Image (cartoon, rainbow over all chains, first blue to last red; front, side, top):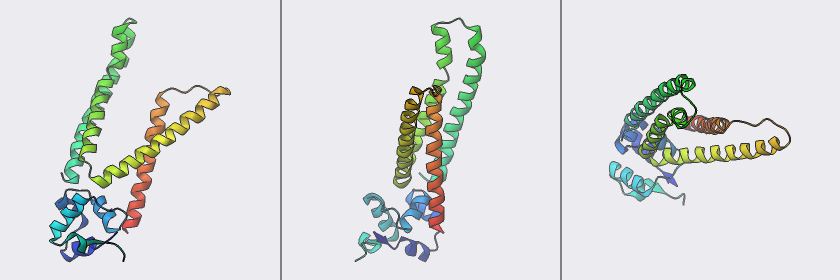
Length: 64
Length: 132
């Protein structure tokens, strides 16, 4: 899965730690998602979408 | 729960267990020679397992606090450590049949802990390199 989490985060001027704190996950998790080494669970993906105020499919998508 | 808060709780809980473990081990080893063989002595020698169980409880609580990615990463590290330990014990078991010295059960924990730590360390370094 591709995602635009890093772009959304940096647009808001947040560090990975800031985002991790808001989502109550570790900074490593944010890093793994941003570098596309880890696809989050559905609940975490929804939490990310809610935090950024965007539909989930605008944040996570396939390469096509 | 935030990562820093979770880590602090774990350090307090695990640190407390380890301090208690060290105290109980020290006391039991000093007291054991003065206690006659029997149930009391066995119980005394096993008494460090009570703080060890507290350590296990602290670890389980930390697993519960881990987020999904960290839990998965730890599960991978523990699985690899378990596999390495199994291979080591099998290998050494065969070697014992041809005269190699018998090893203490304590060695198993050391092999497991070392494998777990090594895998976690490599994964941590890998993550840092990928982040750059």
